[in-house]
Length: 219
Image (cartoon, rainbow, N blue to C red; front, side):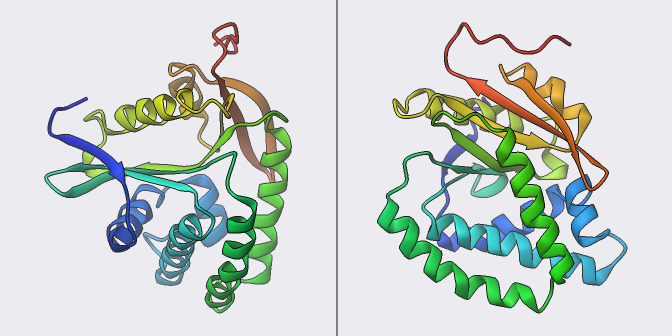
């Protein structure tokens, strides 16, 4: 990793940087465009996407998910949100109640159809995940101007080291709608566990298992 890079947990004060970063990183993402429209050519689509990313950031703190970012000279270049497998049940219930207050503003920007699609997508992808205890990579993004500098690679290595150090987790699952990402994740030890589709959108469900005997799918 570049010695000028620093990876650390994000705090609530990093929200604006996180939202700006992820909104740019996911502006061409197939799922986001399918749900919200094209934010580069539609102002309303851009507002919907920003509202959703903002909600995801708030949710991560309320549900005690792990949010980490890569900084260079205090500038956020990349980040990921990962769901931990052993969150405190009381904290999760309490966080879920507070989360309702964060959902309400979304209802003024997102249609019921979009919310229904989001729920349907979660059902499809979570059903493809292994039944044993694991982390779930909710989202990972890199500032477009910083792509090719090893930011994503550093974040993924950090995530896998974090998962490997957790004795309660057997690995990490993720989903991507970009076919070109499949081989990228394979290089980090992920295997394609299921290829499916959601609302005519291809979805590639992948899993990294800590057991070294777990072999990735062939190219």
